[in-house]
Image 1 (cartoon, chains in turn green, purple):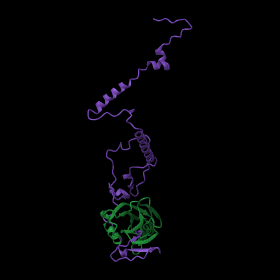
Image 2 (tube, one colour):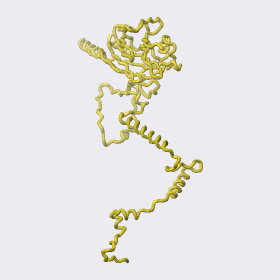
Image 3 (cartoon, rainbow over the protein chains, first blue to last red):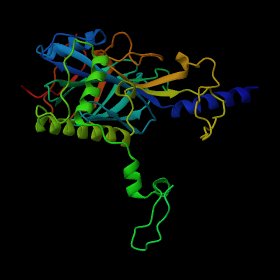
Length: 147
Length: 200
């Protein structure tokens, strides 16, 4: 009986290590020309405006979600044929953080660890032809993974 | 009844009906009804137009009217060519309707269910013919991969919550900060953020 329980635990624990991480990327365009803010971006707009009050309009372009195995990378199309390369470096660690490496457009590589289920924003230097600033916010989960 | 002459210098008699049956061009042309005159065509055209547009509209100019300028014809030809090119490109690249193409849908197969291979059936033209009611996938059976920001979500769970929650100052740790970046001082009440915007 004990052996059966141990075997079951091993079976359950094994695949958890290989479970892919679900990475959600929110694509936002900010502008100085409007004051319209998507209701879902209210907190993001507030934080960005602390750094740049001129950015008053925040439009949600798209949201993309990808399942990426640990150690692998995926490409997320953004806007204007710009792409974001996302690599999952490490599953949830002892602090409950998932480590990602991002390669945003017109920027150096960014590597960070963030708690699951919360977004980490990056205001990129890329601007569209209309002068809109490209902002991405990245979230990874599940929160129930390796510890 | 006319008798055939035996004089070798006289041209032989030809039955016009037999010549028409055998496809003689002269006989066919001779049997064709006369073309209506230009005035007859115009009368017919005006009669048709009077039926279609009674009293309220003016008559359109005929095709050979001097009012039809060459640049109008040229513009129409150019627009037609551009439209044909666009349609050709769309068909060649197998584009679908843009509003729908922004959705990326994956139908979930329940675990343990063997995948059913879909083989083409050349004899079936109406694939919905045997369905009394169109089966719609439930919310749990669809995983959305990409959703446009202003799109309507017909089914499936939205990838975003009602409000994006940012990570707090103690919830993010930068691993490799490029040395080229300026030093960033984070306020205690500010959410961590990489602000790489160029100065205006």
